[in-house]
Length: 202
Image (cartoon, rainbow, N blue to C red; front, side, top):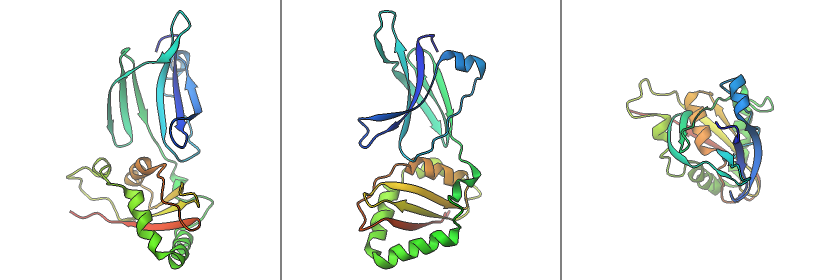
């Protein structure tokens, strides 16, 4: 990075024509430590970019040239010749928030379904979309296949996705979490918890 470059991580607003500043670094940060970390405390869509200030005071983005991602890691190469590598990690405790157990989430989902059964399929479809991202989470030929998992998704009254809880937590769960973060759902009649069961077959 040049001395006038700033690497910036931001979180999209709703819609993504506004953004919240999360963290920024200058070259001196990477000279002290090659890997820098940031804790993402909110679900949503995040992105990073490089801001450059020219000698005449003008400020603008450094354009990206190529990107290569595999699972939760990747590298973006910029036209300036700079390459930025990223790796996403989830804490082991991410599968349980507020110390709720799987049985407790299952009960919340059961109550939601009992009141509004027709919304469950709507929520499941919105969560998966076309599910094309699963080719990256479970590439063709993966053996052994990942263990079955259950996903509990909290949906707010305005249709925004809250926390998603995966049982068991795993690399596959982390990948699904990354690609589905920030999903927007049709508005439920009231806050809703949907249970999604995921199994893998050859």
